[in-house]
Image 1 (tube, rainbow, N blue to C red):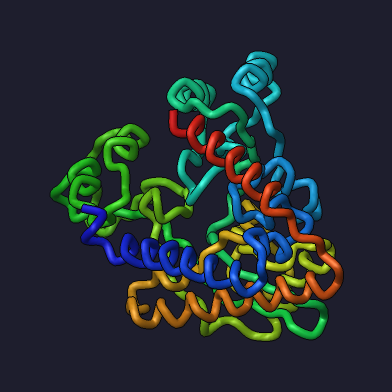
Image 2 (image 1 turned 90 degrees about the horizontal axis):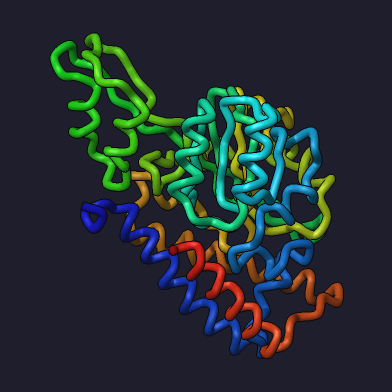
Length: 331
């Protein structure tokens, strides 16, 4: 059950605490739309379910997998019919949250099934990256003087290990992650007996909402890691508080600037190392407090440069639009 998972409570803590900080900071800044200053290049700083298709063009092409979208279901089926798609590929909603509905499709039948089961208006298609490890880097920058990495984690895909007695589906049924969709995973893998010690990745989507686990790499944060990330971020203007979801060979490859960006999350990015099992709820409270201090530092930097905050009326209009988008997404 999800309520028995520590990650459930940490996620709840982050969002409840963030709502409190939002109202307190709205009083401080005398604005309900102060958060938009952190990332002027992204609508609402990426706080309100931004469209992925508007962010990818802002990133250096050599740091991206081949990406297309936003595409409608009809457009994707047209590409499929004319053999314009190479498999495997990754499909995701153009507006998404916490990795929900992201899927690797290994053949056209899987893609068609996905499209029939999901009611989104628009999608992103991406080349599947055959790199062994997936990471998340939370980057902040307030000019050249203040910048850094506040959170660094590795995402571990859900795995089962054979014992020589139970089948793959039996091992999936016994998996402990509260968010793993066991029925969906079993559809990806034919049942068979696993040899003792044989490991099987259940999927390769690095999302907590799909059963992956997050492992803190805070001890790996150093000047070389920041320099590696800056090889990319120095080429991006006005995105100064973001989480990069990336794939790379290893941590040293990131230090060399050798990685690929799967996705960029803006203002609503979480410091994902709070989900490491070694981090207590009380430690998470302090981490979230520091997270918002860094966010407001970036906001102050852009306000000092003359960033114009949206009016309250503009903010209300934007919220109504997002509410409608979310409503349609859940149909």
